[in-house]
Image (spheres, rainbow, N blue to C red):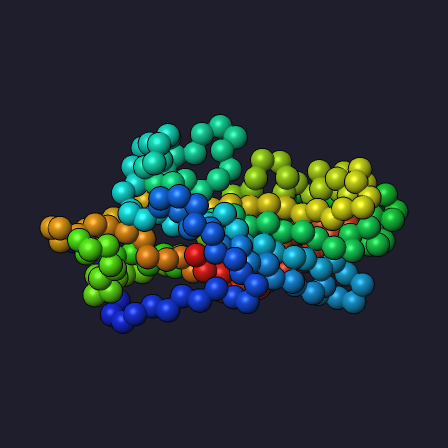
Length: 226
Protein backbone atom coordinates (compact mmCIF):
# COMPACT_ATOMS: atom_id res chain seq x y z
CA UNK A 1 0.00 0.00 0.00
CA UNK A 2 1.34 3.39 -0.93
CA UNK A 3 2.02 5.89 1.83
CA UNK A 4 -0.47 8.81 2.15
CA UNK A 5 -0.19 11.42 -0.57
CA UNK A 6 0.92 14.94 0.06
CA UNK A 7 -0.72 17.18 -2.53
CA UNK A 8 0.83 20.25 -4.03
CA UNK A 9 4.13 21.18 -5.52
CA UNK A 10 7.09 21.31 -3.15
CA UNK A 11 9.40 24.19 -3.91
CA UNK A 12 13.00 23.48 -2.98
CA UNK A 13 15.39 26.41 -2.97
CA UNK A 14 19.03 26.30 -1.90
CA UNK A 15 20.11 28.81 0.71
CA UNK A 16 22.23 31.73 -0.45
CA UNK A 17 25.73 30.59 -1.13
CA UNK A 18 24.79 26.95 -1.67
CA UNK A 19 26.19 25.14 -4.67
CA UNK A 20 24.36 22.36 -6.46
CA UNK A 21 26.49 19.82 -8.29
CA UNK A 22 25.18 16.85 -10.23
CA UNK A 23 27.32 13.84 -9.48
CA UNK A 24 26.20 11.12 -11.84
CA UNK A 25 22.97 9.13 -11.99
CA UNK A 26 20.96 9.07 -8.79
CA UNK A 27 23.00 11.57 -6.82
CA UNK A 28 22.65 15.27 -6.09
CA UNK A 29 25.19 17.06 -3.93
CA UNK A 30 24.45 20.38 -2.25
CA UNK A 31 26.96 22.27 -0.12
CA UNK A 32 25.78 24.87 2.36
CA UNK A 33 27.65 26.36 5.34
CA UNK A 34 26.15 28.06 8.39
CA UNK A 35 28.01 30.02 11.08
CA UNK A 36 26.86 29.44 14.67
CA UNK A 37 28.09 32.03 17.19
CA UNK A 38 29.58 31.06 20.53
CA UNK A 39 26.86 30.55 23.15
CA UNK A 40 28.81 32.73 25.60
CA UNK A 41 31.20 35.64 25.11
CA UNK A 42 34.69 34.36 24.43
CA UNK A 43 33.38 30.83 23.92
CA UNK A 44 33.59 28.39 21.04
CA UNK A 45 31.77 29.15 17.79
CA UNK A 46 31.13 26.66 15.00
CA UNK A 47 30.83 26.39 11.26
CA UNK A 48 28.42 23.67 10.14
CA UNK A 49 28.70 22.39 6.56
CA UNK A 50 25.99 20.31 4.87
CA UNK A 51 27.45 18.46 1.89
CA UNK A 52 27.81 15.16 0.04
CA UNK A 53 24.06 14.58 -0.15
CA UNK A 54 22.89 11.57 -2.16
CA UNK A 55 19.32 11.63 -3.48
CA UNK A 56 18.72 8.42 -5.47
CA UNK A 57 16.98 9.11 -8.79
CA UNK A 58 15.53 6.66 -9.73
CA UNK A 59 14.92 5.09 -6.32
CA UNK A 60 15.54 1.34 -6.30
CA UNK A 61 17.42 0.47 -3.08
CA UNK A 62 18.50 -3.02 -2.06
CA UNK A 63 18.58 -3.09 1.77
CA UNK A 64 20.95 -6.08 1.67
CA UNK A 65 23.42 -4.81 -0.94
CA UNK A 66 26.90 -3.75 0.17
CA UNK A 67 28.12 -2.88 -3.32
CA UNK A 68 26.77 -1.44 -6.57
CA UNK A 69 24.26 1.22 -7.55
CA UNK A 70 21.59 -0.18 -5.21
CA UNK A 71 23.89 -0.38 -2.19
CA UNK A 72 22.38 0.38 1.23
CA UNK A 73 24.73 -1.50 3.55
CA UNK A 74 27.86 0.12 4.99
CA UNK A 75 31.06 -1.89 5.01
CA UNK A 76 34.19 -1.58 7.15
CA UNK A 77 35.46 2.02 7.29
CA UNK A 78 32.55 3.16 5.13
CA UNK A 79 31.45 6.65 6.18
CA UNK A 80 29.42 7.83 3.19
CA UNK A 81 25.73 7.81 2.29
CA UNK A 82 25.03 4.95 -0.09
CA UNK A 83 23.85 5.24 -3.72
CA UNK A 84 20.86 3.00 -3.06
CA UNK A 85 19.45 4.51 0.13
CA UNK A 86 20.93 8.01 0.09
CA UNK A 87 21.89 10.39 2.86
CA UNK A 88 24.19 13.33 3.58
CA UNK A 89 27.33 14.47 5.38
CA UNK A 90 27.72 17.10 8.08
CA UNK A 91 31.06 18.74 8.80
CA UNK A 92 31.63 20.83 11.94
CA UNK A 93 34.57 23.20 12.49
CA UNK A 94 35.07 24.67 15.97
CA UNK A 95 36.67 28.09 16.45
CA UNK A 96 38.42 29.76 19.41
CA UNK A 97 39.18 26.43 21.10
CA UNK A 98 42.81 27.36 21.76
CA UNK A 99 41.74 30.40 23.81
CA UNK A 100 39.64 28.40 26.26
CA UNK A 101 41.02 28.28 29.84
CA UNK A 102 41.05 24.48 29.90
CA UNK A 103 43.01 24.28 26.66
CA UNK A 104 45.51 26.90 27.87
CA UNK A 105 45.93 24.88 31.06
CA UNK A 106 46.69 21.74 29.04
CA UNK A 107 43.66 19.83 30.31
CA UNK A 108 42.21 16.79 28.60
CA UNK A 109 38.55 16.64 27.68
CA UNK A 110 36.16 14.75 29.93
CA UNK A 111 33.43 14.69 27.29
CA UNK A 112 34.10 11.65 25.13
CA UNK A 113 32.32 11.91 21.77
CA UNK A 114 30.55 14.81 20.17
CA UNK A 115 26.96 13.97 19.19
CA UNK A 116 24.84 15.26 16.32
CA UNK A 117 21.12 15.06 15.59
CA UNK A 118 18.82 16.38 12.86
CA UNK A 119 15.25 16.33 11.59
CA UNK A 120 14.92 14.97 8.06
CA UNK A 121 12.22 14.93 5.39
CA UNK A 122 12.62 12.80 2.26
CA UNK A 123 10.13 13.39 -0.55
CA UNK A 124 9.35 10.42 -2.79
CA UNK A 125 7.06 9.81 -5.73
CA UNK A 126 6.89 8.55 -9.28
CA UNK A 127 8.31 9.61 -12.63
CA UNK A 128 6.13 9.50 -15.71
CA UNK A 129 7.39 7.75 -18.82
CA UNK A 130 8.64 11.10 -20.15
CA UNK A 131 10.83 11.55 -17.04
CA UNK A 132 8.72 14.26 -15.38
CA UNK A 133 7.74 14.00 -11.73
CA UNK A 134 4.07 13.30 -10.96
CA UNK A 135 3.40 15.50 -7.90
CA UNK A 136 0.11 13.74 -7.23
CA UNK A 137 2.13 10.66 -6.22
CA UNK A 138 4.42 12.47 -3.78
CA UNK A 139 4.72 11.65 -0.09
CA UNK A 140 7.17 12.56 2.65
CA UNK A 141 9.05 10.33 5.09
CA UNK A 142 10.03 12.35 8.18
CA UNK A 143 12.29 11.71 11.16
CA UNK A 144 12.86 13.85 14.25
CA UNK A 145 16.25 14.27 15.92
CA UNK A 146 17.77 11.27 14.23
CA UNK A 147 21.28 10.58 15.56
CA UNK A 148 23.98 11.04 12.93
CA UNK A 149 26.89 8.62 12.70
CA UNK A 150 30.39 9.76 13.56
CA UNK A 151 33.16 9.45 11.00
CA UNK A 152 35.67 6.98 12.42
CA UNK A 153 37.31 8.33 15.64
CA UNK A 154 37.17 12.00 14.62
CA UNK A 155 34.24 13.06 16.88
CA UNK A 156 36.33 12.00 19.88
CA UNK A 157 36.95 15.20 21.84
CA UNK A 158 40.47 14.30 22.96
CA UNK A 159 41.49 13.30 19.44
CA UNK A 160 40.30 16.73 18.31
CA UNK A 161 42.31 18.44 21.05
CA UNK A 162 45.35 16.58 19.74
CA UNK A 163 44.68 17.95 16.27
CA UNK A 164 44.40 21.52 17.60
CA UNK A 165 47.76 21.07 19.30
CA UNK A 166 49.47 19.33 16.39
CA UNK A 167 48.35 21.82 13.74
CA UNK A 168 48.28 25.28 15.37
CA UNK A 169 47.20 27.14 12.21
CA UNK A 170 44.03 25.13 11.56
CA UNK A 171 40.65 24.65 13.22
CA UNK A 172 38.99 21.27 13.55
CA UNK A 173 35.70 19.70 14.51
CA UNK A 174 33.69 16.49 14.43
CA UNK A 175 32.42 15.11 11.09
CA UNK A 176 29.17 13.15 10.80
CA UNK A 177 27.02 11.45 8.18
CA UNK A 178 23.63 9.80 7.82
CA UNK A 179 22.84 6.82 5.62
CA UNK A 180 19.06 6.43 5.39
CA UNK A 181 17.17 3.16 5.69
CA UNK A 182 15.30 2.02 2.59
CA UNK A 183 11.79 3.37 2.05
CA UNK A 184 9.01 1.65 0.10
CA UNK A 185 7.83 3.52 -2.98
CA UNK A 186 5.06 1.85 -5.01
CA UNK A 187 4.24 3.33 -8.40
CA UNK A 188 1.59 2.53 -11.04
CA UNK A 189 2.60 0.52 -14.07
CA UNK A 190 4.71 2.55 -16.47
CA UNK A 191 6.02 4.88 -13.76
CA UNK A 192 9.37 4.80 -11.96
CA UNK A 193 9.97 5.36 -8.22
CA UNK A 194 12.23 8.30 -7.41
CA UNK A 195 13.34 10.45 -4.50
CA UNK A 196 12.31 13.98 -5.38
CA UNK A 197 14.29 15.78 -2.68
CA UNK A 198 15.75 15.96 0.81
CA UNK A 199 15.28 18.58 3.52
CA UNK A 200 17.33 18.65 6.75
CA UNK A 201 16.41 20.93 9.65
CA UNK A 202 17.04 21.50 13.37
CA UNK A 203 20.63 20.34 13.44
CA UNK A 204 22.16 20.03 16.92
CA UNK A 205 25.77 19.22 17.80
CA UNK A 206 26.51 18.72 21.49
CA UNK A 207 29.28 17.91 23.95
CA UNK A 208 29.37 17.57 27.74
CA UNK A 209 32.91 18.42 28.84
CA UNK A 210 33.78 20.26 32.03
CA UNK A 211 37.39 20.98 31.04
CA UNK A 212 37.65 22.47 27.55
CA UNK A 213 34.55 22.43 25.35
CA UNK A 214 32.00 22.98 28.10
CA UNK A 215 28.48 21.59 28.21
CA UNK A 216 27.49 23.07 24.89
CA UNK A 217 25.01 22.59 22.07
CA UNK A 218 25.48 24.32 18.73
CA UNK A 219 22.16 24.52 16.89
CA UNK A 220 20.94 25.69 13.51
CA UNK A 221 17.39 25.40 12.18
CA UNK A 222 18.65 25.14 8.60
CA UNK A 223 17.01 24.27 6.37
CA UNK A 224 19.43 22.40 4.14
CA UNK A 225 18.17 21.06 0.80
CA UNK A 226 19.30 18.51 -1.75
